[in-house]
Amino acid sequence: MFTADSRGEVATERVREPPTPHFFNNTLDASAFDFYDNKTRSKPKTSPQTRDFDRWRPKFHLLAPRGWMNDPCALGYNQATGSYHAGFQWNPKGYEWGNMSWGCAQSRDLLHWNVQQTPSMEPDTSHGEEGVFTGSMLASNPSGEKDGTLTAFFTSARYLPLHYTLPYTLGAESIHMATSTNGGRSWTRYEHNPIVSLPPKEHNVLGWRDPFITRWEEADTILRRTSPSLYGLVAGSIQGKTPTVFLYEINPGHLTEWSYIGTLSDLGMNFTPSDWTGDYGQNFETANLISLADSKGKRHNIMTLGVEGCLKPRPKERSEVIDDHSQMWLCGQLESSSKGLDLGFKFGGIVDYGCYYAMASFPDPVTGEQVAFGWVLEEDLSPDLTARQKWSGCLSIPRVLRLVELHSVTKALKTDVRSITSLQVTPTENDTVSILTFCAVPDPRLQNLRKSQYSLYPRVFASRAPDQIELLKGCATWELKMSLKIGGATRCGFEIDHSQDYRETTRVYFEPGDEMLFVDRSASTSYPGINRLPERAPHTLFTFLDSSSKMEELETLDFHVYYDCSVLEIFVNGRTAITTRVYPTSGTSFGVRPFVEGTSAKGERSELLSFNLWELESTGCIS
Image (cartoon, rainbow, N blue to C red; front, side, top):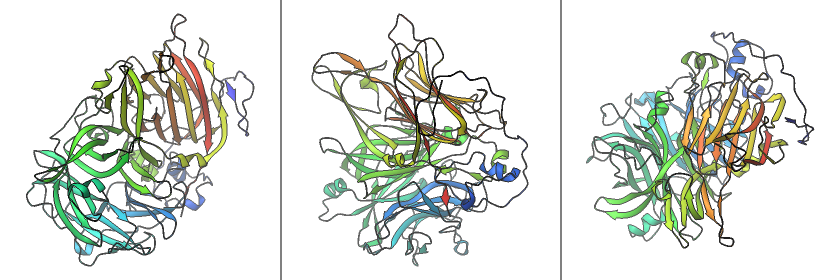
Protein backbone atom coordinates (compact mmCIF):
# COMPACT_ATOMS: atom_id res chain seq x y z
CA MET A 1 0.00 0.00 0.00
CA PHE A 2 1.05 3.61 -0.40
CA THR A 3 0.60 6.60 1.85
CA ALA A 4 0.65 10.21 0.77
CA ASP A 5 1.94 13.21 2.64
CA SER A 6 0.25 16.61 2.86
CA ARG A 7 1.77 17.65 -0.46
CA GLY A 8 0.14 14.71 -2.19
CA GLU A 9 3.46 13.01 -3.04
CA VAL A 10 3.59 9.22 -3.15
CA ALA A 11 5.64 7.79 -0.31
CA THR A 12 7.42 4.46 -0.10
CA GLU A 13 5.60 1.17 0.18
CA ARG A 14 5.20 -0.19 3.69
CA VAL A 15 3.34 -2.84 5.60
CA ARG A 16 0.76 -1.79 8.17
CA GLU A 17 -0.05 -3.67 11.35
CA PRO A 18 -3.80 -4.13 11.82
CA PRO A 19 -4.89 -1.27 14.08
CA THR A 20 -7.18 -1.47 17.06
CA PRO A 21 -10.80 -1.20 15.86
CA HIS A 22 -12.23 2.25 16.40
CA PHE A 23 -15.94 2.96 16.46
CA PHE A 24 -18.15 5.80 17.54
CA ASN A 25 -20.29 5.28 20.60
CA ASN A 26 -23.36 3.47 19.33
CA THR A 27 -25.51 4.74 22.19
CA LEU A 28 -28.14 6.99 20.67
CA ASP A 29 -30.13 9.57 22.56
CA ALA A 30 -33.52 10.35 21.05
CA SER A 31 -34.13 13.36 23.27
CA ALA A 32 -34.94 16.68 21.68
CA PHE A 33 -32.19 19.22 21.01
CA ASP A 34 -31.64 22.59 19.41
CA PHE A 35 -31.10 22.50 15.66
CA TYR A 36 -27.60 22.78 14.31
CA ASP A 37 -26.05 26.19 13.61
CA ASN A 38 -24.22 26.09 10.27
CA LYS A 39 -21.83 28.81 11.48
CA THR A 40 -20.23 26.31 13.85
CA ARG A 41 -20.33 23.40 11.42
CA SER A 42 -16.58 22.84 11.39
CA LYS A 43 -16.32 22.83 15.21
CA PRO A 44 -17.31 19.37 16.47
CA LYS A 45 -19.26 19.10 19.71
CA THR A 46 -19.34 16.15 22.03
CA SER A 47 -23.00 15.90 23.03
CA PRO A 48 -24.82 12.76 21.84
CA GLN A 49 -27.47 14.92 20.17
CA THR A 50 -24.96 16.88 18.12
CA ARG A 51 -23.07 13.71 17.24
CA ASP A 52 -26.30 12.19 15.94
CA PHE A 53 -26.95 15.31 13.85
CA ASP A 54 -23.43 15.49 12.41
CA ARG A 55 -22.44 11.83 12.05
CA TRP A 56 -23.62 11.37 8.45
CA ARG A 57 -24.21 14.98 7.47
CA PRO A 58 -22.55 15.82 4.09
CA LYS A 59 -19.96 18.57 4.07
CA PHE A 60 -19.98 19.97 0.52
CA HIS A 61 -23.48 19.11 -0.67
CA LEU A 62 -26.24 21.71 -0.48
CA LEU A 63 -28.35 21.08 2.62
CA ALA A 64 -31.25 22.64 4.45
CA PRO A 65 -30.32 24.01 7.88
CA ARG A 66 -32.43 21.33 9.53
CA GLY A 67 -35.44 19.12 8.92
CA TRP A 68 -36.77 17.43 5.79
CA MET A 69 -35.52 18.47 2.34
CA ASN A 70 -36.50 17.24 -1.12
CA ASP A 71 -36.93 18.67 -4.67
CA PRO A 72 -34.72 21.48 -5.99
CA CYS A 73 -36.87 24.46 -7.02
CA ALA A 74 -36.45 27.83 -8.74
CA LEU A 75 -32.92 27.20 -9.98
CA GLY A 76 -31.27 29.95 -11.95
CA TYR A 77 -28.71 32.70 -12.35
CA ASN A 78 -29.51 36.28 -11.41
CA GLN A 79 -27.42 38.55 -13.63
CA ALA A 80 -28.41 41.58 -11.56
CA THR A 81 -26.49 40.20 -8.57
CA GLY A 82 -24.07 37.84 -10.32
CA SER A 83 -25.23 34.96 -8.15
CA TYR A 84 -26.97 31.62 -8.46
CA HIS A 85 -30.24 30.88 -6.70
CA ALA A 86 -31.33 27.44 -5.55
CA GLY A 87 -34.62 26.87 -3.84
CA PHE A 88 -35.66 23.54 -2.37
CA GLN A 89 -38.66 21.83 -0.88
CA TRP A 90 -38.28 22.06 2.88
CA ASN A 91 -40.10 21.23 6.08
CA PRO A 92 -38.42 23.58 8.58
CA LYS A 93 -40.58 22.23 11.41
CA GLY A 94 -39.73 18.55 11.23
CA TYR A 95 -37.59 15.80 9.71
CA GLU A 96 -40.51 14.11 7.87
CA TRP A 97 -42.42 15.23 4.78
CA GLY A 98 -45.01 17.90 5.59
CA ASN A 99 -45.57 21.66 5.85
CA MET A 100 -43.96 21.93 2.42
CA SER A 101 -42.23 25.30 2.08
CA TRP A 102 -39.40 26.70 -0.01
CA GLY A 103 -35.87 27.09 1.29
CA CYS A 104 -33.39 29.54 -0.23
CA ALA A 105 -29.68 29.31 -1.00
CA GLN A 106 -27.39 31.65 -2.93
CA SER A 107 -23.93 31.12 -4.37
CA ARG A 108 -21.33 32.78 -6.57
CA ASP A 109 -19.85 29.51 -7.81
CA LEU A 110 -22.40 26.68 -7.22
CA LEU A 111 -20.01 25.29 -4.58
CA HIS A 112 -20.15 27.64 -1.59
CA TRP A 113 -23.72 28.33 -0.51
CA ASN A 114 -25.33 30.88 1.78
CA VAL A 115 -28.38 29.05 3.07
CA GLN A 116 -31.18 31.01 4.65
CA GLN A 117 -32.26 29.81 8.09
CA THR A 118 -35.93 30.64 7.46
CA PRO A 119 -38.24 29.70 4.56
CA SER A 120 -38.52 32.03 1.58
CA MET A 121 -42.16 30.97 1.09
CA GLU A 122 -44.52 29.00 3.33
CA PRO A 123 -48.03 27.60 2.78
CA ASP A 124 -50.71 30.30 2.74
CA THR A 125 -52.96 28.56 5.22
CA SER A 126 -55.28 31.56 5.43
CA HIS A 127 -56.35 30.72 1.88
CA GLY A 128 -56.51 26.97 2.41
CA GLU A 129 -53.11 26.15 0.95
CA GLU A 130 -51.63 22.88 2.23
CA GLY A 131 -48.21 23.12 0.61
CA VAL A 132 -45.91 25.06 -1.70
CA PHE A 133 -44.80 22.40 -4.17
CA THR A 134 -42.08 22.33 -6.82
CA GLY A 135 -41.61 25.03 -9.43
CA SER A 136 -39.18 27.03 -11.54
CA MET A 137 -38.22 30.66 -12.04
CA LEU A 138 -37.28 33.28 -14.61
CA ALA A 139 -34.81 36.11 -13.99
CA SER A 140 -37.28 38.77 -15.08
CA ASN A 141 -40.36 40.56 -13.82
CA PRO A 142 -43.86 39.42 -14.91
CA SER A 143 -43.62 41.75 -17.92
CA GLY A 144 -40.47 39.99 -19.13
CA GLU A 145 -38.16 42.88 -18.18
CA LYS A 146 -34.79 42.19 -16.59
CA ASP A 147 -34.80 44.68 -13.74
CA GLY A 148 -33.44 42.40 -11.00
CA THR A 149 -36.85 40.90 -10.18
CA LEU A 150 -37.20 37.12 -10.08
CA THR A 151 -40.52 35.50 -11.05
CA ALA A 152 -41.39 32.01 -9.82
CA PHE A 153 -44.10 29.58 -10.88
CA PHE A 154 -45.10 26.77 -8.54
CA THR A 155 -47.78 24.25 -7.71
CA SER A 156 -50.08 25.35 -4.90
CA ALA A 157 -51.50 22.26 -3.17
CA ARG A 158 -54.91 22.62 -1.56
CA TYR A 159 -55.99 19.04 -0.85
CA LEU A 160 -53.77 16.25 0.45
CA PRO A 161 -52.77 13.51 0.00
CA LEU A 162 -51.87 13.66 -3.69
CA HIS A 163 -50.76 10.44 -5.35
CA TYR A 164 -51.22 8.83 -8.75
CA THR A 165 -52.86 5.78 -7.10
CA LEU A 166 -55.57 7.89 -5.42
CA PRO A 167 -58.68 9.55 -6.88
CA TYR A 168 -57.89 13.08 -8.02
CA THR A 169 -59.77 16.07 -6.59
CA LEU A 170 -60.14 18.95 -9.02
CA GLY A 171 -58.65 22.06 -7.51
CA ALA A 172 -56.13 20.09 -5.48
CA GLU A 173 -53.33 21.59 -7.59
CA SER A 174 -53.12 24.96 -9.29
CA ILE A 175 -50.33 27.03 -10.81
CA HIS A 176 -49.38 30.14 -8.90
CA MET A 177 -46.91 32.95 -9.51
CA ALA A 178 -44.74 34.94 -7.09
CA THR A 179 -42.03 37.59 -7.41
CA SER A 180 -38.92 38.46 -5.45
CA THR A 181 -36.95 41.70 -5.40
CA ASN A 182 -34.32 40.47 -2.91
CA GLY A 183 -32.75 37.60 -4.83
CA GLY A 184 -35.23 34.92 -3.77
CA ARG A 185 -34.88 35.43 -0.01
CA SER A 186 -38.62 36.08 0.13
CA TRP A 187 -41.46 35.79 -2.39
CA THR A 188 -44.58 37.89 -2.82
CA ARG A 189 -47.54 36.03 -4.27
CA TYR A 190 -49.36 37.44 -7.28
CA GLU A 191 -52.55 39.04 -6.02
CA HIS A 192 -54.71 37.36 -8.66
CA ASN A 193 -53.46 33.80 -8.21
CA PRO A 194 -53.99 31.19 -9.51
CA ILE A 195 -52.80 31.95 -13.00
CA VAL A 196 -53.96 28.47 -14.11
CA SER A 197 -56.58 27.10 -11.75
CA LEU A 198 -57.42 23.65 -13.15
CA PRO A 199 -55.99 20.93 -15.42
CA PRO A 200 -57.26 20.80 -19.02
CA LYS A 201 -60.94 19.95 -18.78
CA GLU A 202 -60.78 17.37 -21.58
CA HIS A 203 -58.53 15.07 -19.50
CA ASN A 204 -59.21 12.99 -16.41
CA VAL A 205 -55.88 13.56 -14.72
CA LEU A 206 -54.19 11.83 -11.77
CA GLY A 207 -51.41 14.39 -11.48
CA TRP A 208 -50.73 17.92 -12.76
CA ARG A 209 -47.82 19.75 -11.15
CA ASP A 210 -44.27 21.13 -11.12
CA PRO A 211 -44.36 23.88 -13.80
CA PHE A 212 -41.13 24.31 -15.77
CA ILE A 213 -40.64 27.35 -18.05
CA THR A 214 -38.39 27.39 -21.11
CA ARG A 215 -37.85 28.82 -24.57
CA TRP A 216 -38.12 26.34 -27.44
CA GLU A 217 -37.12 27.45 -30.92
CA GLU A 218 -38.28 24.27 -32.64
CA ALA A 219 -41.75 24.64 -31.17
CA ASP A 220 -41.81 28.27 -32.33
CA THR A 221 -41.01 27.07 -35.87
CA ILE A 222 -43.64 24.34 -35.97
CA LEU A 223 -46.28 26.62 -34.48
CA ARG A 224 -45.19 29.39 -36.89
CA ARG A 225 -44.53 31.97 -34.23
CA THR A 226 -42.97 35.12 -35.68
CA SER A 227 -41.30 36.03 -32.38
CA PRO A 228 -39.91 33.78 -29.62
CA SER A 229 -42.47 32.49 -27.18
CA LEU A 230 -42.21 30.82 -23.80
CA TYR A 231 -43.47 27.34 -22.98
CA GLY A 232 -44.64 25.82 -19.73
CA LEU A 233 -44.41 22.10 -19.03
CA VAL A 234 -46.65 20.63 -16.32
CA ALA A 235 -46.05 16.97 -15.47
CA GLY A 236 -48.73 14.41 -14.70
CA SER A 237 -50.85 11.64 -16.17
CA ILE A 238 -54.19 10.80 -17.74
CA GLN A 239 -56.06 8.15 -15.81
CA GLY A 240 -55.83 4.70 -17.37
CA LYS A 241 -54.01 5.96 -20.47
CA THR A 242 -50.54 7.39 -20.06
CA PRO A 243 -48.15 9.49 -18.06
CA THR A 244 -47.70 12.74 -19.92
CA VAL A 245 -46.62 16.37 -19.96
CA PHE A 246 -49.20 19.11 -20.47
CA LEU A 247 -47.78 21.85 -22.70
CA TYR A 248 -48.71 25.53 -22.42
CA GLU A 249 -47.67 28.60 -24.37
CA ILE A 250 -46.85 31.67 -22.25
CA ASN A 251 -46.85 35.28 -23.38
CA PRO A 252 -43.24 36.48 -22.76
CA GLY A 253 -44.48 40.03 -22.08
CA HIS A 254 -47.33 38.96 -19.77
CA LEU A 255 -46.25 35.91 -17.78
CA THR A 256 -49.72 35.42 -16.32
CA GLU A 257 -51.14 34.56 -19.76
CA TRP A 258 -50.98 30.79 -20.32
CA SER A 259 -52.65 29.02 -23.27
CA TYR A 260 -53.01 25.24 -23.31
CA ILE A 261 -51.58 23.55 -26.43
CA GLY A 262 -52.00 19.86 -25.63
CA THR A 263 -50.27 16.83 -24.21
CA LEU A 264 -46.67 16.46 -25.32
CA SER A 265 -46.21 12.70 -24.96
CA ASP A 266 -48.33 9.57 -25.24
CA LEU A 267 -46.13 6.63 -24.29
CA GLY A 268 -48.81 4.50 -22.64
CA MET A 269 -48.66 2.92 -19.21
CA ASN A 270 -45.30 1.44 -18.15
CA PHE A 271 -43.68 1.91 -21.56
CA THR A 272 -40.45 -0.13 -21.42
CA PRO A 273 -38.42 -0.24 -24.66
CA SER A 274 -35.82 -2.51 -23.01
CA ASP A 275 -33.93 -3.02 -19.75
CA TRP A 276 -31.34 -0.56 -21.08
CA THR A 277 -33.95 2.21 -21.01
CA GLY A 278 -36.18 1.27 -18.10
CA ASP A 279 -39.88 1.74 -17.38
CA TYR A 280 -41.58 5.13 -17.90
CA GLY A 281 -44.16 4.31 -15.25
CA GLN A 282 -47.66 5.69 -14.75
CA ASN A 283 -47.18 9.32 -13.72
CA PHE A 284 -44.61 12.03 -14.46
CA GLU A 285 -43.25 14.65 -12.08
CA THR A 286 -40.69 17.48 -12.40
CA ALA A 287 -40.53 17.43 -16.21
CA ASN A 288 -37.78 19.60 -17.75
CA LEU A 289 -37.05 20.14 -21.42
CA ILE A 290 -33.77 21.23 -22.99
CA SER A 291 -32.36 21.41 -26.50
CA LEU A 292 -28.77 20.22 -26.94
CA ALA A 293 -26.64 20.46 -30.09
CA ASP A 294 -24.39 17.64 -31.29
CA SER A 295 -20.97 18.17 -32.88
CA LYS A 296 -22.58 18.87 -36.27
CA GLY A 297 -24.88 21.53 -34.84
CA LYS A 298 -28.04 19.42 -35.02
CA ARG A 299 -30.26 20.03 -32.01
CA HIS A 300 -31.89 17.25 -30.01
CA ASN A 301 -34.89 17.57 -27.70
CA ILE A 302 -34.19 16.04 -24.29
CA MET A 303 -36.96 15.76 -21.72
CA THR A 304 -36.02 14.75 -18.17
CA LEU A 305 -38.71 13.19 -16.02
CA GLY A 306 -39.31 12.08 -12.47
CA VAL A 307 -41.26 8.86 -13.00
CA GLU A 308 -43.72 7.23 -10.60
CA GLY A 309 -45.27 3.77 -10.83
CA CYS A 310 -42.33 1.90 -12.32
CA LEU A 311 -42.48 -1.86 -12.66
CA LYS A 312 -38.72 -2.33 -12.63
CA PRO A 313 -37.36 -5.49 -14.28
CA ARG A 314 -35.09 -6.16 -11.28
CA PRO A 315 -35.87 -7.41 -7.77
CA LYS A 316 -36.98 -4.76 -5.31
CA GLU A 317 -33.82 -3.79 -3.48
CA ARG A 318 -34.47 -0.37 -2.02
CA SER A 319 -37.12 1.53 -0.15
CA GLU A 320 -40.65 1.75 -1.51
CA VAL A 321 -39.99 5.24 -2.87
CA ILE A 322 -36.87 4.28 -4.81
CA ASP A 323 -38.28 1.05 -6.22
CA ASP A 324 -41.41 2.83 -7.44
CA HIS A 325 -39.60 5.88 -8.88
CA SER A 326 -36.90 6.61 -11.46
CA GLN A 327 -35.16 9.73 -12.71
CA MET A 328 -35.40 9.26 -16.46
CA TRP A 329 -34.87 11.04 -19.75
CA LEU A 330 -35.96 10.67 -23.34
CA CYS A 331 -34.91 12.13 -26.65
CA GLY A 332 -37.87 12.81 -28.91
CA GLN A 333 -38.72 13.99 -32.39
CA LEU A 334 -41.00 17.02 -32.21
CA GLU A 335 -43.85 17.00 -34.70
CA SER A 336 -47.17 18.74 -35.14
CA SER A 337 -50.23 16.69 -34.36
CA SER A 338 -53.98 17.03 -34.10
CA LYS A 339 -53.54 17.92 -30.43
CA GLY A 340 -50.82 20.51 -31.11
CA LEU A 341 -47.33 19.09 -30.66
CA ASP A 342 -46.03 15.59 -30.03
CA LEU A 343 -42.58 14.60 -28.76
CA GLY A 344 -42.27 11.05 -30.02
CA PHE A 345 -39.83 8.70 -28.33
CA LYS A 346 -36.55 8.05 -30.18
CA PHE A 347 -34.31 6.74 -27.40
CA GLY A 348 -33.98 7.27 -23.67
CA GLY A 349 -32.86 5.94 -20.34
CA ILE A 350 -32.25 6.48 -16.65
CA VAL A 351 -30.28 9.53 -15.54
CA ASP A 352 -29.16 7.93 -12.27
CA TYR A 353 -29.81 4.41 -11.02
CA GLY A 354 -29.68 5.21 -7.30
CA CYS A 355 -31.39 7.45 -4.77
CA TYR A 356 -31.45 10.49 -7.08
CA TYR A 357 -34.80 12.02 -8.05
CA ALA A 358 -36.70 15.19 -9.01
CA MET A 359 -33.90 16.58 -11.16
CA ALA A 360 -34.26 20.24 -12.16
CA SER A 361 -32.03 22.22 -14.50
CA PHE A 362 -31.38 25.73 -15.76
CA PRO A 363 -29.31 27.38 -18.52
CA ASP A 364 -26.14 28.84 -17.03
CA PRO A 365 -25.11 32.01 -18.91
CA VAL A 366 -21.67 31.88 -17.25
CA THR A 367 -20.67 28.56 -18.85
CA GLY A 368 -23.23 28.23 -21.64
CA GLU A 369 -24.26 24.81 -20.34
CA GLN A 370 -27.39 23.38 -18.74
CA VAL A 371 -26.79 22.75 -15.03
CA ALA A 372 -28.87 20.35 -12.96
CA PHE A 373 -29.40 19.37 -9.34
CA GLY A 374 -31.32 16.39 -8.00
CA TRP A 375 -32.72 15.34 -4.66
CA VAL A 376 -30.59 12.74 -2.84
CA LEU A 377 -32.93 10.75 -0.63
CA GLU A 378 -32.40 9.52 2.93
CA GLU A 379 -34.53 6.40 2.42
CA ASP A 380 -31.97 3.87 3.66
CA LEU A 381 -32.14 5.00 7.29
CA SER A 382 -34.72 3.56 9.63
CA PRO A 383 -37.33 6.04 10.94
CA ASP A 384 -35.67 5.79 14.34
CA LEU A 385 -32.26 6.87 13.03
CA THR A 386 -33.80 9.67 10.97
CA ALA A 387 -35.60 10.90 14.07
CA ARG A 388 -32.34 10.95 15.97
CA GLN A 389 -30.37 12.87 13.36
CA LYS A 390 -33.25 15.37 12.94
CA TRP A 391 -32.77 15.94 9.20
CA SER A 392 -33.34 14.11 5.94
CA GLY A 393 -32.09 14.54 2.39
CA CYS A 394 -29.78 16.87 0.48
CA LEU A 395 -29.20 18.06 -3.07
CA SER A 396 -26.71 16.39 -5.37
CA ILE A 397 -23.51 17.93 -6.65
CA PRO A 398 -24.14 20.24 -9.62
CA ARG A 399 -24.15 18.30 -12.90
CA VAL A 400 -23.97 19.49 -16.49
CA LEU A 401 -26.28 17.97 -19.10
CA ARG A 402 -24.55 16.91 -22.29
CA LEU A 403 -24.77 14.70 -25.32
CA VAL A 404 -22.21 11.90 -25.63
CA GLU A 405 -20.95 11.02 -29.13
CA LEU A 406 -18.91 7.91 -29.91
CA HIS A 407 -17.67 7.08 -33.39
CA SER A 408 -16.18 4.03 -35.16
CA VAL A 409 -17.87 1.64 -32.76
CA THR A 410 -17.82 -2.01 -33.81
CA LYS A 411 -19.53 -3.73 -30.87
CA ALA A 412 -20.38 -3.74 -27.17
CA LEU A 413 -19.08 -6.30 -24.70
CA LYS A 414 -22.02 -8.66 -25.05
CA THR A 415 -25.24 -6.99 -26.18
CA ASP A 416 -25.92 -6.09 -29.81
CA VAL A 417 -25.33 -2.33 -29.91
CA ARG A 418 -28.41 -1.81 -32.08
CA SER A 419 -30.65 -3.28 -29.35
CA ILE A 420 -29.52 -0.83 -26.64
CA THR A 421 -32.48 1.54 -26.56
CA SER A 422 -30.70 4.23 -24.53
CA LEU A 423 -28.57 4.96 -27.61
CA GLN A 424 -29.15 6.44 -31.04
CA VAL A 425 -27.16 4.14 -33.30
CA THR A 426 -26.25 5.30 -36.82
CA PRO A 427 -24.49 2.95 -39.28
CA THR A 428 -21.32 4.36 -40.84
CA GLU A 429 -18.62 3.08 -43.18
CA ASN A 430 -16.39 0.06 -42.48
CA ASP A 431 -19.24 -1.73 -40.71
CA THR A 432 -19.01 0.59 -37.73
CA VAL A 433 -21.65 2.72 -36.04
CA SER A 434 -21.82 6.13 -34.41
CA ILE A 435 -23.52 6.41 -31.05
CA LEU A 436 -25.36 9.33 -29.47
CA THR A 437 -26.69 9.36 -25.92
CA PHE A 438 -27.38 11.73 -23.04
CA CYS A 439 -25.63 12.14 -19.70
CA ALA A 440 -25.52 14.26 -16.54
CA VAL A 441 -21.90 14.50 -15.37
CA PRO A 442 -20.12 16.45 -12.58
CA ASP A 443 -19.82 20.18 -13.21
CA PRO A 444 -16.12 20.87 -14.00
CA ARG A 445 -16.12 23.68 -11.42
CA LEU A 446 -16.12 21.02 -8.71
CA GLN A 447 -12.36 20.78 -9.35
CA ASN A 448 -12.07 24.01 -7.37
CA LEU A 449 -12.79 22.02 -4.20
CA ARG A 450 -9.64 19.91 -4.61
CA LYS A 451 -6.92 20.05 -1.96
CA SER A 452 -4.25 17.37 -1.39
CA GLN A 453 -3.81 14.88 -4.23
CA TYR A 454 -2.90 11.23 -3.71
CA SER A 455 -1.89 8.97 -6.61
CA LEU A 456 -1.00 5.37 -7.39
CA TYR A 457 1.48 4.42 -10.09
CA PRO A 458 0.15 2.59 -13.17
CA ARG A 459 0.69 -1.14 -12.91
CA VAL A 460 -0.30 -4.56 -14.20
CA PHE A 461 -2.45 -6.41 -11.69
CA ALA A 462 -0.69 -9.45 -10.29
CA SER A 463 -1.69 -12.02 -7.72
CA ARG A 464 -0.60 -10.03 -4.66
CA ALA A 465 -2.92 -7.60 -2.90
CA PRO A 466 -3.33 -4.31 -4.79
CA ASP A 467 -1.88 -1.01 -3.67
CA GLN A 468 -4.16 1.49 -1.99
CA ILE A 469 -4.45 5.11 -1.00
CA GLU A 470 -4.32 5.16 2.79
CA LEU A 471 -5.99 8.01 4.64
CA LEU A 472 -4.51 7.55 8.09
CA LYS A 473 -6.47 10.29 9.82
CA GLY A 474 -9.69 9.56 7.98
CA CYS A 475 -11.17 11.59 5.15
CA ALA A 476 -14.91 12.22 4.77
CA THR A 477 -14.76 14.26 1.53
CA TRP A 478 -12.89 13.21 -1.59
CA GLU A 479 -12.98 12.89 -5.38
CA LEU A 480 -11.61 9.87 -7.24
CA LYS A 481 -10.71 9.39 -10.91
CA MET A 482 -9.59 5.90 -11.89
CA SER A 483 -9.02 4.23 -15.25
CA LEU A 484 -8.64 0.49 -15.80
CA LYS A 485 -7.88 -1.73 -18.74
CA ILE A 486 -10.15 -4.62 -17.81
CA GLY A 487 -8.29 -7.30 -19.76
CA GLY A 488 -9.56 -10.75 -18.79
CA ALA A 489 -11.06 -9.65 -15.46
CA THR A 490 -14.42 -11.02 -14.39
CA ARG A 491 -14.84 -8.24 -11.81
CA CYS A 492 -12.98 -4.97 -11.33
CA GLY A 493 -13.44 -1.74 -9.39
CA PHE A 494 -12.45 -0.28 -6.03
CA GLU A 495 -13.10 -0.64 -2.32
CA ILE A 496 -13.59 2.06 0.31
CA ASP A 497 -12.43 1.24 3.83
CA HIS A 498 -14.64 2.92 6.41
CA SER A 499 -12.83 1.43 9.42
CA GLN A 500 -9.16 0.96 10.13
CA ASP A 501 -9.64 -2.76 10.73
CA TYR A 502 -11.23 -3.27 7.27
CA ARG A 503 -14.49 -4.55 8.75
CA GLU A 504 -16.59 -1.80 7.20
CA THR A 505 -16.14 -1.42 3.45
CA THR A 506 -18.10 -0.37 0.39
CA ARG A 507 -17.29 -2.16 -2.84
CA VAL A 508 -17.94 -0.60 -6.27
CA TYR A 509 -17.30 -2.85 -9.27
CA PHE A 510 -18.13 -3.80 -12.84
CA GLU A 511 -18.80 -7.31 -14.13
CA PRO A 512 -18.01 -7.35 -17.87
CA GLY A 513 -19.68 -10.73 -18.46
CA ASP A 514 -23.02 -9.44 -17.20
CA GLU A 515 -22.54 -5.84 -18.39
CA MET A 516 -23.52 -4.66 -14.92
CA LEU A 517 -22.25 -2.15 -12.36
CA PHE A 518 -22.69 -2.90 -8.66
CA VAL A 519 -22.36 -1.05 -5.38
CA ASP A 520 -22.01 -3.65 -2.63
CA ARG A 521 -23.01 -1.98 0.65
CA SER A 522 -23.43 -5.17 2.67
CA ALA A 523 -20.39 -4.40 4.86
CA SER A 524 -20.58 -0.59 4.67
CA THR A 525 -21.72 -0.22 8.27
CA SER A 526 -22.24 -2.16 11.47
CA TYR A 527 -25.02 0.18 12.58
CA PRO A 528 -28.46 -1.46 12.94
CA GLY A 529 -31.49 -0.03 11.15
CA ILE A 530 -29.78 0.75 7.83
CA ASN A 531 -30.63 -0.71 4.43
CA ARG A 532 -27.43 -2.22 2.98
CA LEU A 533 -28.85 -3.90 -0.11
CA PRO A 534 -26.87 -3.47 -3.34
CA GLU A 535 -27.25 -0.92 -6.10
CA ARG A 536 -26.88 -1.91 -9.73
CA ALA A 537 -27.00 -0.43 -13.21
CA PRO A 538 -26.58 -1.85 -16.72
CA HIS A 539 -23.36 -0.67 -18.32
CA THR A 540 -21.20 -1.83 -21.19
CA LEU A 541 -17.91 -0.96 -22.84
CA PHE A 542 -17.49 -0.41 -26.57
CA THR A 543 -14.86 -1.59 -29.02
CA PHE A 544 -13.57 0.98 -31.50
CA LEU A 545 -11.93 0.53 -34.90
CA ASP A 546 -8.72 2.50 -35.40
CA SER A 547 -8.97 3.84 -38.94
CA SER A 548 -5.20 3.95 -39.47
CA SER A 549 -4.17 0.58 -38.01
CA LYS A 550 -7.45 -1.20 -38.75
CA MET A 551 -7.14 -2.71 -35.27
CA GLU A 552 -9.96 -2.94 -32.77
CA GLU A 553 -9.51 -1.73 -29.21
CA LEU A 554 -11.81 -1.96 -26.17
CA GLU A 555 -12.35 1.29 -24.30
CA THR A 556 -11.11 1.61 -20.74
CA LEU A 557 -13.31 1.44 -17.64
CA ASP A 558 -13.30 4.96 -16.19
CA PHE A 559 -14.66 5.85 -12.75
CA HIS A 560 -15.30 9.39 -11.51
CA VAL A 561 -16.54 9.40 -7.91
CA TYR A 562 -17.51 11.95 -5.26
CA TYR A 563 -17.67 10.85 -1.63
CA ASP A 564 -19.15 13.10 1.06
CA CYS A 565 -19.55 11.46 4.46
CA SER A 566 -22.70 9.46 3.60
CA VAL A 567 -23.29 10.42 -0.05
CA LEU A 568 -21.56 8.51 -2.85
CA GLU A 569 -22.06 9.74 -6.44
CA ILE A 570 -20.52 7.42 -9.03
CA PHE A 571 -20.07 8.18 -12.74
CA VAL A 572 -18.74 5.56 -15.15
CA ASN A 573 -17.42 6.32 -18.63
CA GLY A 574 -19.33 9.60 -18.56
CA ARG A 575 -22.64 7.91 -19.34
CA THR A 576 -23.82 5.81 -16.37
CA ALA A 577 -24.45 7.17 -12.87
CA ILE A 578 -25.37 5.68 -9.50
CA THR A 579 -25.96 7.83 -6.43
CA THR A 580 -26.21 5.98 -3.16
CA ARG A 581 -25.95 6.42 0.60
CA VAL A 582 -23.49 4.69 2.92
CA TYR A 583 -23.61 5.17 6.67
CA PRO A 584 -20.31 3.94 8.15
CA THR A 585 -19.99 3.89 11.92
CA SER A 586 -17.04 6.27 11.65
CA GLY A 587 -18.79 8.63 9.22
CA THR A 588 -15.60 8.73 7.15
CA SER A 589 -13.12 6.62 5.14
CA PHE A 590 -9.56 5.45 5.83
CA GLY A 591 -8.51 4.05 2.49
CA VAL A 592 -9.43 3.47 -1.15
CA ARG A 593 -7.96 0.68 -3.25
CA PRO A 594 -8.51 -0.66 -6.78
CA PHE A 595 -9.01 -4.36 -7.31
CA VAL A 596 -9.36 -6.88 -10.11
CA GLU A 597 -10.65 -10.43 -9.88
CA GLY A 598 -10.51 -13.32 -12.29
CA THR A 599 -7.46 -12.34 -14.35
CA SER A 600 -5.62 -15.45 -15.44
CA ALA A 601 -1.95 -15.65 -16.39
CA LYS A 602 -3.04 -17.06 -19.76
CA GLY A 603 -5.61 -14.36 -20.39
CA GLU A 604 -5.28 -10.72 -21.33
CA ARG A 605 -3.77 -8.76 -18.46
CA SER A 606 -5.67 -6.15 -16.52
CA GLU A 607 -3.95 -2.83 -15.89
CA LEU A 608 -4.37 0.15 -13.63
CA LEU A 609 -3.81 3.06 -16.00
CA SER A 610 -4.41 5.94 -13.58
CA PHE A 611 -5.61 6.45 -10.01
CA ASN A 612 -5.91 9.91 -8.47
CA LEU A 613 -7.71 10.92 -5.30
CA TRP A 614 -8.18 14.46 -4.02
CA GLU A 615 -9.29 15.50 -0.59
CA LEU A 616 -12.04 18.08 -1.01
CA GLU A 617 -12.83 21.27 0.80
CA SER A 618 -15.65 20.99 3.30
CA THR A 619 -17.59 24.02 2.15
CA GLY A 620 -20.44 23.85 4.62
CA CYS A 621 -23.55 25.95 4.19
CA ILE A 622 -23.08 29.43 5.60
CA SER A 623 -26.14 30.97 7.17
